[in-house]
Image (cartoon, rainbow, N blue to C red; front, side):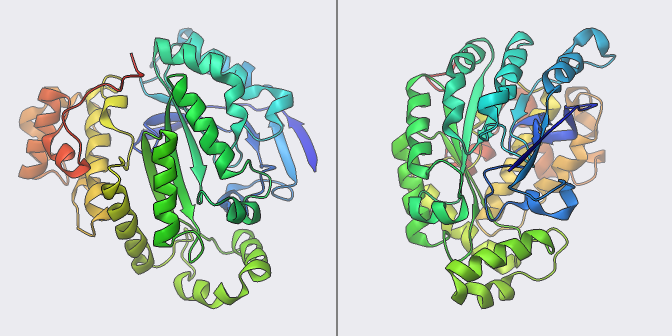
Length: 385
């Protein structure tokens, strides 16, 4: 394994619209590359431009905290950062991978987030996050903290094959229970489920059941992408050693999609299956509204709720216009409350969407959203202030 210390010119990734998966506009990669070396990781794909051998070579942004301190300084900004969760969970490297024990970049970033009074959403596979419980509790007291763990399943044996240097799912579940006992809200990102290996009804139900027993507050579900090039080649190599009989089935569902997507029919099938199981266990399938309703401005709140409605409908196998409407609204600079009479002028916004938007602007919530989410009126979770 090779560690390369580098200096970053910038750190904070800024999205043009609110991300409804993480309730964030701002994220960061403290490390490029990841010693977790998960077999399915799409960070291995050429499009992410991670240098060296993925899983064996990692670049550490040793000046990350210094750069972030400058980027968060309100005195340097003509336009203030918008209120949302700061997302600590890089797309090309886990912020709590083994190197974090030495460099402590994530811990220092949490301290900065606390100083600037931002909420934080951490996504990791590592139980090392418990080290920073003291800071997470302080952030939670002042604004809010969410900690989510990603899983391909809760089966320790399968995880040992596909997530070779990651704490076992059972250890991650125990860490969730500990965090919950300390008042920290936790999510499970059950993604990617691995086709024909962790996507069976039995394993999906077992994952949801164990998540509920551990105290998980929500589960975000998703299938696996497999991009042509290094990612697909590496995955097929490992698959041929452990599940050689599945190679033909993979060739049937994965073509040469630019984004590495499997067939729509495959995704639709596992989505319906998961939706049925999550509904049976009364498990929220997106971050519940109560966790961000009082954080986001009105435009971002409308966008997130509409995208969640879009997700709930598609998980049922239904068509939805709300994703397009959400994107259209995300481009609006003026507060929506100042243009209530002009909503129908926006692309993708029809009469039904207009009523939903007006409902959100007037009440901060949506009765239609709750009917789809299977939740009652908003109540703050007992472990949140």
